[in-house]
Image (cartoon, rainbow, N blue to C red; front, top):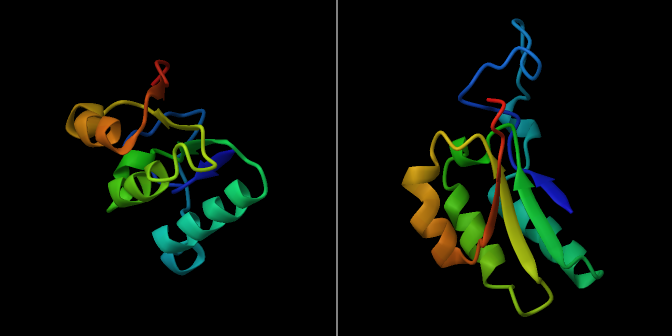
Length: 111
């Protein structure tokens, strides 16, 4: 299952973000707690693989907390937790992502 954690990104690729891009108001974006609860609901219903995506998921404040919380479910209903990123912040987060249980990262090289 793909779980989009934000519509925001730190790059402005023309195919993904038009010049007049509008973002969802924060009040309409699920909190990290709501995303966690949603993921747990899907795990309880048999989803075994979750890919965190965005926009760019690593620009979401406290994103690593969600990764840690989901990573604790690996081996307990969740088989795999992966991430899709443009890699602009991957050096900063690679260690914490690995520690939380992320073993595969999909990097968008076109960015």
